[in-house]
Length: 396
Ligand SMILES: Cc1ncc(COP(=O)(O)O)c(C=O)c1O
Image (cartoon, rainbow, N blue to C red):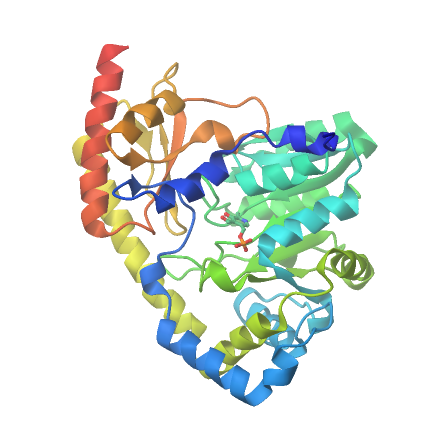
């Protein structure tokens, strides 16, 4: 059978494997990028299901407008204005099936085969795959501790000119590094981008998962031209299973997203959106986020303490101030994929860093998730991994 050419670009199966590993029994897996299922507010979700079915059953089981459930869009617009001082109206918000759908639709909207997408690097593998599927040429832009490096970014924007169709970035508690951009870098980046007619996809999946509750202004706040497309999700702050996320764009761009969304799936499930809206109206998502951040901070602290105790000093890492990940670096020349094979024999898994590079991958880095592992298993798993690393470094 003949397959479309795009499928051959999606050969990296790391994300599929990470989901498989999560299901493997007695594996301590630091691979996933998911929140902890034990934090899901099951009772409140059950009540929301029940109430929505009883009170709004017929509408909840029908189609929904393509833009999404109006009340939910209004609540999201209000929350964003309050937390991030953005000015999006509910009509500038579309509900998507996970933010992954927003990424896919963005590729569909802006990218033709062979166009260039600039990526803050390392970056979220799901975005890399979504844009690969649209047959984009992905160009890696390096980052430092402050965020994307604006010199190489400018160089790439000038070099590729009109072929550049999008810049994709994750300014808050980035996946995979856990770092957040400084305010100065945000400002400088948006100032630079304002000279180019190129959309900026701001993926804000982790923006509210701040351990010290400090929330930074999103790029959308600095945007004077309406070139930022902001993508948010309830997957990390609430639960991924409802598949409720949103995308914000100014009116003329939003009209195009609506056409695409309609062509893609008509609308996201009405029932999930109404349940989410019910939850947001009757409970405090902020309290829930405070609770999960406290759990994640504890797990992160436990992991950092275990890394200090068990990892050799040649392995470097830094403590994040939010999000779900710690990014670690092995000495030059070492290969985290080789390390993963060895660790899996001892029933410990993590994500090798090479998967997070759209091009010119480095092989000596890896990502550790701390949110989805109990404190006890964090201690146990890191002790095992430390032993495996020590052997690996001594042998080779
Ligand atoms: C940066 C980032 N964006 C988007 C997603 C997709 O999330 P969802 O489709 O569940 O909203 C993820 C999931 O890991 C992510 O890490």
